[in-house]
Image (cartoon, rainbow, N blue to C red; front, side):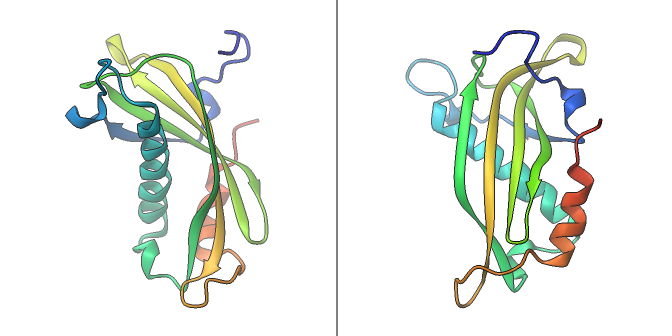
Length: 150
């Protein structure tokens, strides 16, 4: 857990992508299982990319594969929570993108309560050869929109 002063808010993320919890997300202990948070990150990043680029990113000649992920849990989630995943870019390289992410629970009166923060690294590879390649221009242009506000 981080202190309240250093916790990000929804305003720190240029994009908020909606992701609902599902009945099957809860584990035996009655809360969303830890591995499911990674699914929320993956769903938000790739769903937003498809929307921003306007094509199915799986059809591009280069694809982003996950090279690294991390998650820090701040508060529990449970079905039927509604979520907003905050997306921003921490680093945009020649062949990789480091996303800074946050999961917010939609609370009373629409308040967004921090539940988790994370990091997600996409490395771009040729879809056929599986060798590293430059980030496709349409992806790079979209990701430029994720620069956090100053």
